[in-house]
Image (cartoon, rainbow, N blue to C red):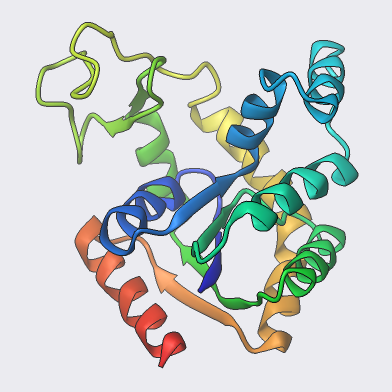
Length: 217
């Protein structure tokens, strides 16, 4: 089973991906993680990625597609969660082609819905671990020890510079401009499922699991 998680910044994609990794053994394919991994890999593709990122430029779709193709080729029986990809219709077409080449298909595209005002509240209270990337919400999901990561006890948590209402509005506009066409694309394909993520984590996780169980039946 392969799925896509769609949703604006702060909608809970990372949290729900982690829940699926723990409960179902799925593998998360995050474009950011793949680019960082490629950068230090020493491969020809990795050197291309490093050169582009060092120049402050955006990595092309062709390179991202190549990285995903490599993961699919080595994936075996793994079940993938695509997070942060696709973002555009062109990327959605590319993903469909890549999956077909490896005898796979998308079983579900889950859109996490949330009220914009709730997003602002979530983002304003969000901190993360610079070492392992764990994300906490100071209001709804704080760390066990104030100011420090649960998994990296000596690591102080930090707040992203763009985790504020003004930056969020800019990021939301960019998200909806580029990603909203995907809603119609996947609705037409019959795989779009919508989940209200403005609830507690376990409720959202339970609904997603029910959707995947039904898709696999």
